[in-house]
Image (cartoon, rainbow, N blue to C red; front, side):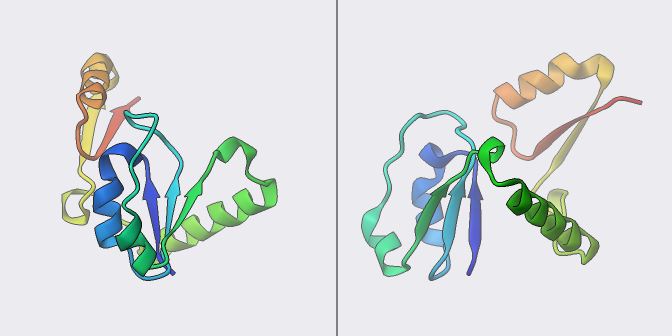
Length: 118
């Protein structure tokens, strides 16, 4: 079963519906611009898609520890990667340029914005 982790459900509902595998779960844990979303019923019905809304603060501590361990194992195995080639560009800023980093996030930069503290 595949899992799509979604942080912008309002913007990505149609995209998610076209990329999910049969039996997939779309896990929504953030809201990046939109308090509601339209869920395309027919494409998700044919794939038996499940929607799971998650508030990390209320997840059972044992389940959270298991999830952290699974992500760590995936990183060690090389299953998770970042960077342009992985589709997750990294945008690095020095601490002195924190305002620029913040502006990039507000502008909807694609990828991860990182502030180097050293």
